[in-house]
Every structure is written in structure tokens, then in C-alpha cells.
Length: 587
Ligand code: ARG
Image (tube, rainbow, N blue to C red; front, side):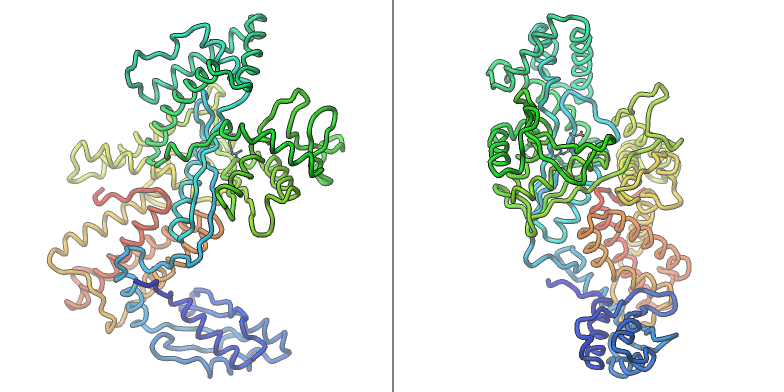
């Protein structure tokens, strides 16, 4: 089924044609239509247009009004104030349009899909091998996953890349240590859990570090190992692979806890670009984008200077010949642009890496790999803070382990579910507890705009009142329970019925779901979706308070209200899915 034009798009078109008929030079101008408290919509665009045309705004507005076709969709339009237009939508148009969304058998609620989609390569969920995941990795994974869902829902081709930190000098130390203590990572062929894998790695890392710091000869052997690794010595590479495999067991267990699908094929870590590094440097040097400075290959920027006023270069190759983070990222850009054919490169990475990406993107532009048609964006996210407003640390001052946080969230949520549970078995309580707890963590992360810091406050996150996922999940479960109670009576749209003010407000908000998807995807802004859903649940609550559903005045009204309930439930379910959050049928 084709997509459904929203009422606001429809009204917008009506207004635009009345406007250009009145004032031909205003063709294509935006009437600036907004939802309004005074009427259903208000258009404020005429003021600026009148000014430009040196016309009287009220007179111009009157002329536009006389040309607006009223009837099926726009019931009423009038001029207000200095030249605003107030528009009222016909009840039957509200119900009718929702009915068209409801009838969309693809389950997309009539949301359009791009006719000519682009390709976005998104770099997210990129933890580091042999290291524990912390809250920073949570943000990249949660925001990235939601942006993937949003983009795919609009029809965009999305290629996922998990740029894990699987390369670097610390591997020399780790490999050398493992070589000298060969059984440290063995588990006799038995399957290990994620936590076990992590504690093996952690133990090994600590022991290797201790030896590295205290034993000069070991240090020398470890350094030689880095050279072997970079030279591709097969035995060294095989050892390195063990670390990567062990870490992946752990990563996958954390992603599973996060209820997130991460595919092995999409994990292309830093090491995946090794073969391209020398070529990347050659291209940059030959084109003059990078220059040798004190033996290192550097790119300089006029506007990037250190505290001493000297330019800070991007170092592509160190003076000892080694390649670092920048060379890898530049090679990844070449891969994503020329092999994966991306139009957009999106990086969901901590704001503290903003300077790195600014320099990398500018370098790629100078090299011609990025241009007006192929662009790169860092979706930079802020820091997770503790309740005290300082970067989140344990009481001992260590970074907080992500798994501990998730476990605690699930525990708290399970307590909330248990307390409210009416007819849930123990097993169901455990399952719902996980869905509510993980949902709470994701929602809190997504509901402020990504670039801002936010406080990790579990009490607030699992609260039943307020802007939380639990509130939305309960709203969904309550609607589902009403629909079950309705039994034989099925939801059905009755466009002939007049609507209560609370029904109109709910209906008009439901109608703007497609716009919210469009905006949230285009701006990489999942928080626009959370805000939309929260308002939806609030409008539903006031509808439910004011308009009896199963005990409504007539059988037709019962059906129509059940219909509003069902569209609300489907929209909540779809919207939450775009955030990576489950909506259990019963809570
Ligand atoms: N592994 C890095 C970290 O933990 C993030 C990688 C970001 N992606 C990239 N292409 N540099 O900080």
C-alpha cells in the first residue's frame, strides 16, 4: 500500500497553492505551518512574505483565506492577529486519515519510504579488544542502533561498521606474555561465557602489565613483538587472533544483554585496514596533502593550534614508520567511499574525539575522497555523569563496568515489575524485568540530545511517572489489555462521528508520526522520537481519562475509540522499536 500523506502535509499544500495564487512571487514559499493551542494548526509565514512584497499582512492573509478550499480536510480558516492563519481540521479528516494509516498492511503506518535512497555507512558500537566495556561504549551502541533503525525505516541503505580497537602497541605486551604463559587463555575447548572471557582477559592484561613495568628484558621482548605483529609474522598473528576471539565472546554477551543485534560480518576493526595504510600515506604525500615534518608524515591546518600557538598537525605516519589511529580512519574512509559506495559516513563517537574527526574529515576532503556529494558527520555524544554531576566513576574512582550497570538496571526494573504484576509468572517477571530495565537505560540515553551530557540515575530511569520508557511500556500494555477486554468487539474507524477535544488532540498527534520519523532520521536525533512518544502517551492518558472506551455512548463510538486505542498502541510499538526498546504485551 502507498504511503499516507499526513494532514499537516496536506494542509501545507492547500495553503501553498492559495498563497501562490494570491501572490505569484510567493510560489514555493513556506507558509510555516505549526500545531497550535489556539486552533489545530497556525501558519505564520504570511507576515514575512507580506513584508517582502511590501503588502499589508492582514490584507494578504484575508486574500489567502478567501482562496483556501474548505470542506473535506480544512473545516475552517481565519485570520488572527497581525496576519496569522488559524486552521481547524474536520473531524472526519482526522479519523479518515488515521484509518488509511491503519489499513497499511505493511505495518508501516503509512510512513513513506525513500524513492531514491542513499547509502549511509554508520560507525558505532566500537569497543576495544582486551578491555572492559564502559558507559561510553553504551552510548555509541544505543544511539547508533537507534539511528540504524530510523534510517532503515525511511528506506536508506545502511551499512554497519563496528570499528573495534583491535590493533596497537599494547598487543605486543599481551602476545609476548601469552606466549610465555601459553595456557592462560585456554578453556580446554569448553564454551565460555562472556563474563568468563572478560575475566580471563582482565587477569592476563594485569599480569602482562605488571611484568612489562617491572622486567626490562620482558619489555624489550614485548616491543619486538609489536614489530613482528605489524610485519605479519604468522605465529604472532595467531596469538593476536586469540585475543580478538576471546574479546568478541565478551562483546557479544554484552550486546545480547543490551538486546541488540550485532553481526560478526559488520565488525571490521582497526586491523581490517592494515593493507591500505601504506597506500593511504602514499596518496596523501604525493598529492601534497601531507608533508614530512621531523620524519613524521603530517597534515597541517591553519585554524588548529595548540596552547602554545604552534599548529597541531594530524600525524598520519610516525617518524618510526608506525601508523596510528588517523591512518586507520583515513583508510576506512577510502574503503567506505570507494568500495562500499557510501554517500554519507556517520560516526557515533564521543565528543572528546571531535578534533580528531575534524582533522580526519578535512584531510579526506583535501584528498578529494570527501566532497559535496559524499559527506562525513560525527554524531558526537556527551559524557555520562554520576548523580553528583561528575563523570561517572565507582566509589573507588574507577570507571564503571557497563555490565554491572546493566545488571543493576534489570534488578531494579524487576522489582518494579514484580510490585505491579498481577498475573505474571516468575519467568515472565524475569523476562519483563530485563525488557523494562534495558529499555530504561536506552531511553534515558536517547531522550536527551546526544551532544549533551546526562546523569545516570537509575531511580529516575525506572520511575513509573515521567518521561521514562517504563511509563511508555505501561501505557502500551494498558491499551493492549483494553483491546483484549473488548473481546468480540473489534476496533473500527467511524469517520462520521464527531470527536471529543481529547480525541482530536490524540488523533492529530498520531497523524504526525511520519514527520517525526522523517525529522529524527534526517537529523540523527532519536530524542525527537522519545519526545514524540512521551507526548503520545500523555495525550492517550488524557483521552482515556475523558473518554470512556468500552462504556462509550454507542456501539459505533466504542469501535471508534478502540480504533484510536489500537492506532496509538501500534504507533507506540513501532516508535519504541525504532529506539531499540521492547513493548511487552502485559506488564
Ligand atoms: N574504539 C574507539 C574508542 O573506544 C572508538 C572508535 C571510533 N570509530 C572510529 N572510526 N575511530 O574510543
